[in-house]
Length: 317
Length: 317
Image (cartoon, rainbow over all chains, first blue to last red; front, top):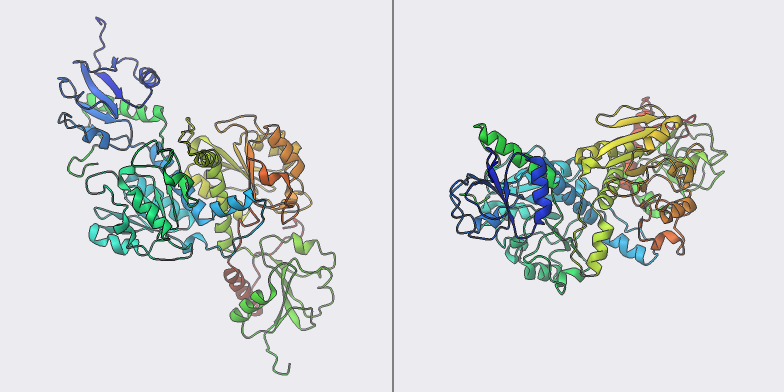
């Protein structure tokens, strides 16, 4: 390519995203840059979603790694990644989509969606009777980063009593914030609905297990507590969730993520009456909005400005 | 009763509410007042929900009529009601409950609840693909009283683009407000989701009919527009709704109220795949909260203060 652009070239690499669609989008937004889909010495920026591991180790001009989603576990699990800045895709759009999903499932549980849908299938007009208002329901959010904070504020605006838990202490108006493992049991002991928006790190892996469920209260205005996981599948012990629901320790769960995706067709979750399965759609971000933000970051970086939304390697997210 | 209280007596009258439950609640909140369940000359206040018509005409000491719900059509349709102030039950609780319901159904349509539930029944992992964000969806609210205003603000807080229509011009931050019949077509022509929270008056009866649907756009990010009616069953022409859905003029509907309640077991709505039926549960208010507010109004009234939440008989709500 003799007519090579002077602007830094891009590598797009994903084992799961449709390559030609994504390359077209990137070309449309960055027409003045070369785009590669295989490793090439000239690439300066890598756009990654579940890339083939090992692929990035000998790229002499590589400067920044961009994740094409909020999670970066797919990058950090590659033992051969170069020691370069890693940027997560945090767009307003992605945050807003996640809050939509969380509010949708909190309300569907709170307002007894499953009960009314079953009655509709039976042509049966029946009021469930006592209906607690949102302000009587305690929703707790595991993870108070951008996503957790936005969901907490919006749930509170609808009327729910909201608390949250995170590794480091946060402050959010009208939201009771707990921090550190030692405060996890007291945080959990009050909740009617547990929403998990944690990142996947060695510390959070399998955190949604029988030990955690043992700290939940046994009943409340909606019965036993309800679990919503829209974080990562690796956060949940699925056998423990099935067992907790069968033992009425949990009244049910809305799960968008799973240990293995797609969820196997014979997994018990599909047909459990108190489980809602969605196929990892909580916060599909608009690809153009996400790419536009990455391209802007590159332009700023080339103009000497600092990168934002950087991964903290010590925390792992 | 020789030991009659000096405080004004109460008549409780309803053909649908469970009498002994309600009388117990009123007694607990107003232990110093006599409570009647049949007309009696000494009653000063009537607590009404679908009372037997004609019952109120010869009560010499009656001073105020209280509706035990937001609607007052059940009182105004009694040709024998005395010319007295009528107070609607508008509690923060009722308003909040209605917004919960509206947000729940807006999100369930926006996030394709029916699609994902069908796939779950088939153990089928499938992403619907393109997913517009809330800010790409135009939600329009028919009726901008307390209920409509609260729902509009909360939907906007989640990200939806919200507009509203009412008889008289309103102003709500971030919400485009239309007023008057002449502006109804332009209001409707932009919407992806139509939420009806109108009161039932002669002007609004049957407003949700084929003439109104004819002003809707034919497609948008979610396909044809979707209808949510949580106002009154008398607002909707049910044959026209069935026809509009079958003709894909509407993509579906969430209906909480019906021309006749309970909805007949053989009504087509029950089994239409794009219709969600709930049994008039959108805003069941907490009876104690509602009664407490009425008792407080009575105490204020007896202390010479003005009644609030009065029905405007000229408007009819």
